[in-house]
Amino acid sequence: MNYVYVTLLLCLFIHSGYSFAPSTFGLARQSTLLPAKHAMKKAAKGHNAYRPKKSRPSDKNRKKVVYELDTFVKPEEFTVKGS
Image (cartoon, rainbow, N blue to C red; front, side):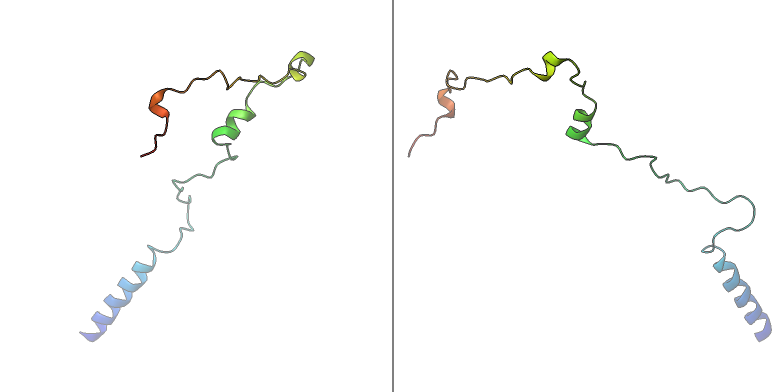
């Protein structure tokens, strides 16, 4: 009886090791996670990377637009009143 119990316990112990060991025979099991071929740029970096390039001299030498902030009138809802 003891010999059968030890043999059964040994078989179960060996068989449980197969679930943690990698497969070596036949085709290897494919993973569901695949690494990216190249990292992509995110958010503003990606937007700026794919913008049209300035190739004409008129585009390269163009001055920046200056916005007049003095003409902007703030509504009364946005004023801070003392209490």
